[in-house]
Length: 291
Image (cartoon, rainbow, N blue to C red; front, side, top):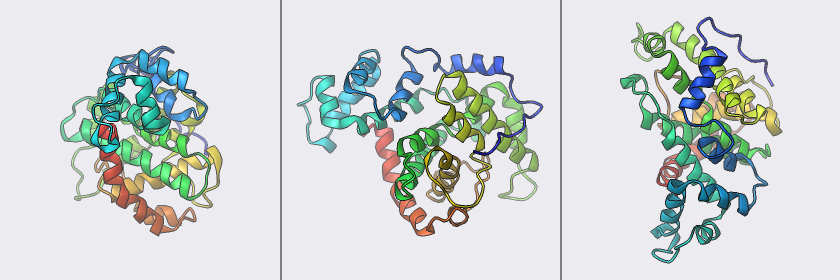
């Protein structure tokens, strides 16, 4: 993978990031967001582990039961236990419900138009779905990892909003030309939020590949997409472009090149991007509803 971005002078310190990780409710090996996230990337997790997690998370268990009894699964009023719900839904759906639950739990600071919690959640879920779909289309073999990385690829923005709100707001002041990011904003967003995101997932005790892909997703080189974990930064970059094309971008927060250009530079058919983008609205809504 690419070397990490050099540190910026005002990048939060490891101690600040560790404190923020605790504030975001994802530290420790017991319950909480980190526990839910483990369901998203561990393909070998067994049903017993899923049941233990659900047993320790009443809100998540209730959400799983609600989904299992929804009209979508044609089981309304017939699923009364969590273990039966897991059988009905399957682990893939449980992972989706956990993903939506994770995003719901993140306390995104309110910075007006600079950072809107709902917009951020939809963007994160859209990039996760797009990156996963691209991995499957290109047979990269990291579908689950791509979803996980997409879900958290911009988590550094939340960290900056908590620790450097004035810097973030000033960097995103109205540019001289409509539609153009100020150079300072591009610098802050490309370097700081990627580096902060990597440090944050490290503080949460998540896998090293996740931090590496987050840290380098704005610097993924052109060329063959490749396979395995080395493909993750490029999958995130193209997934980001697809999300923007489908209306799930973070205009004013991240300057994303057109999806077709990103795909072509990595040997992907731009038509695949259009197909993935077309299905994103429905996929995101299902995740937000827990379906």
